[in-house]
Amino acid sequence: MRGVAALIVILAHTSMLFGVKFQETYLAVDLFFMLSGVVIAHAYDVRLTSTLKVRQFLWLRVARIYPLYLLGVLILLGTFLSGITTRVSWIEYGSLPAMIGCALLVLPYLGTGSYLITPLNPPGWSLIFELAANGAYALILRRLNARMLMAILLFSAAGLLALALLRHDHTIDMGWHTKTFLGGFFRVAYPFFAGVFLQRRFAAKKQLRSAHRTVFPAARWIPWLLLTVLVAITTAAPGPAIRPWYEWLVIVTVFPALIYAAMHCEPGARTARLFNTLGILSYAVYAVHYPLTFLLMGIWERATGLSVENFAPWGGFVLLAILLPLCWWLVPNYDQPMRRRLLSWFKEDKPAVVDVMPNVAVVKPNE
Image 1 (spheres, one colour):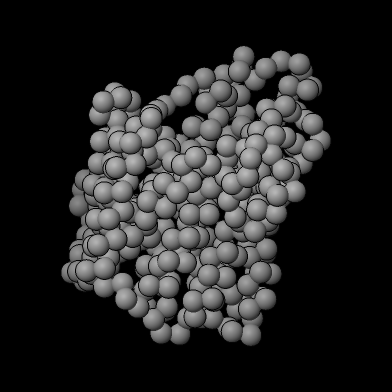
Image 2: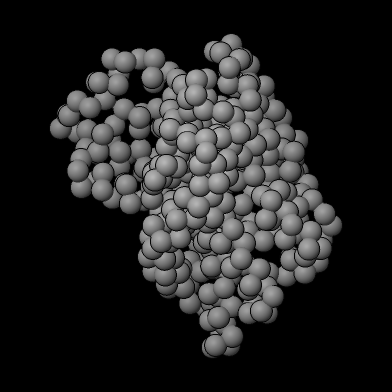
């Protein structure tokens, strides 16, 4: 699901290369937040209440996210400074030193000039809110009982709907823009803590944990059915009158149902290998696709003098042909070594943990 959602995000950000644009593709980010809540709760609910310190957990999360995010920042910054393309003009209207400082510290840029809170790697806005949700989870975990969890879900769901209805365009597509920055906290709160709720419910029903491995003749098709529904949801085009309600219901009800159903599915061996590959690629693809797209477009247009829009959808296929192998190489050769180096700074703590977010690649801090 995470891998397919990452591909949907690529389609949203590179619609000019594919010659097609879908309305609801940004809902894939809300799915990311919910999946994050599931896996974080699975990995850390017990550890954070026993041996793992909050600062260790937060450093694990930073180390997991930072290397690929930083690479994306450096690619887009280099693209801008070299003048390869004029398509990143939003950078030149703000304070570049402030943008660089905020990018290096994974902080939102709320200064004048840029409408993006992460102008040097635009998809990075969701990582800021992801870290905020992770921090809130760690700090309140010892008090995060069922009643408190339900209160968070009800409050954030109500706030999310209210903001969508009050916005001029009546959408939940907020958080990445300086004018909708505060709305991002509602946007991350519901899906993330809904993911925590789903994981706790799943873990509490031990009989389901064994039953989900039962093989039925039609079970091999269930994962593909769930992914088909995911694609259909994010490529739909509800009308303006129902759009905020559609998006809200997808996040509040449909995504939890899809994820909870997926938690009970075990794909066949071949399908599992494909899904594992998509999972490994997902975060790398998400973190570098935007800067890499503008770099490649700039190189092409300077070399040929032709606009990439004239070659849709082939330009999109070329991007995928470059991006996916590059990300497959980056995970073991750049991302994991950089994470080990960052984690070695806390070597004296020797946390016996495995960080599996934001994709399924695993790094043990003591390796």
